[in-house]
Each structure stands twice: as C-alpha cells, then as structure tokens.
Image 1 (cartoon, rainbow, N blue to C red):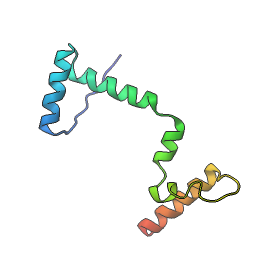
Image 2 (cartoon, rainbow, N blue to C red):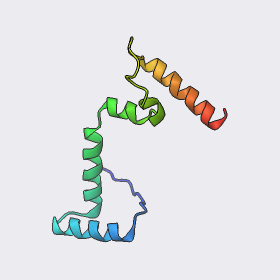
Image 3 (cartoon, helix red, strand yellow):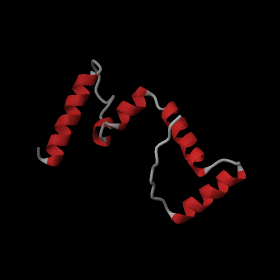
Length: 89
C-alpha cells in the first residue's frame, strides 16, 4: 500500500511521550497515529457525523418541541440559515 507524507504540529511534550509510547510497543510513531485515526474513523457513525456539523445552538433545540421530527433537509436549511446570518451572507 502506498503511503502519503503528512506534516503535523504538536506540543513538544506530546511528541516526546508519543514517541516513547510507540517505542515501548515496538511500532513507529506513524503507525501509532495511523492506527488511532483508523479506529476513530471506524467508530464514527453517520449520525455522529451529521450531529457534529450542526451548531450547538441548534442541537440544543432538538427535542424541545412536540410534533413531527425535523427532516434532514430541514436541518440543512436551518444550518444554512444560521451560517448565512452568522457570516452576513
């Protein structure tokens, strides 16, 4: 499998501890980070992804009203309206 070079910026103490952790497990720091990212992405569900893209203000409103559920289309429209207002578009 081909690999791609990636540059990351981190606190020096984190890098030091991560290198030590990887060395103690006989793996490279690249492998450690790749494994972590793969597990993180694998554990993410589409619902988590959708919820992560909704502003906190709107998320806090979900479920407070009784009635029919809000459709994904309505949520996208609400998000779009929120961003237009926020950024003056």
